[in-house]
Image (cartoon, rainbow, N blue to C red; front, side):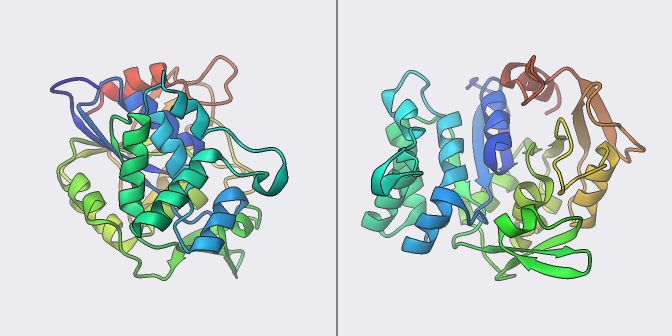
Length: 288
């Protein structure tokens, strides 16, 4: 983190958001992550069903992205058990669930997990309760993030319950932000799962911050098959989020007729599998 740097808020879910957080911590003075809690699969889904808590997996990844890389806890949080009754669970997911169960407050649990990891920013769930992702797929309603991700061509997403409330801290962070980073990540099942929270969507419309969308490096089948950069931006706008600028990897997705400022840059790792936090940080640091 940089003294006097901008106040950055990043939103989304999964591995993509953690890359943005690693990038932001290179130039930001303050970082807040607002993370999707619609996941219903794997370790997160099991803990969500058992304890009635928001799924911890994406939140764990974000805490680790902002953590002290030299801490043993940072490595241990990502350790996934391979046998026995704990098979498939990440240790960090279990720690967050245990902290939530013992404290009775999920936000307190995340703050304490961040303290344990030496995280330099704040990580917040997009809603205070678990939500179900609902999508319209070729005229049929599909519910559940895992089911939606493989259902086919998505025309729009919403949440159940539709009026789920975000933490107050998430709204405060957006109101005082200098820059908002959206993505990268699964467009409908991660990014728009956050934008679909009504109070967050309204706060994104009101924020004075510059809103930057980090476009994915490649299509995600079947969610964004044949999407170009313009189609990503159009999907955000159709869900009530107008961004100020989109950044995309040069030579990756076709650009299309993008309706906002578009910055093309070399932001990917050499294998082109994911964004490189150093390169991404250099681009985002020039756009706040």
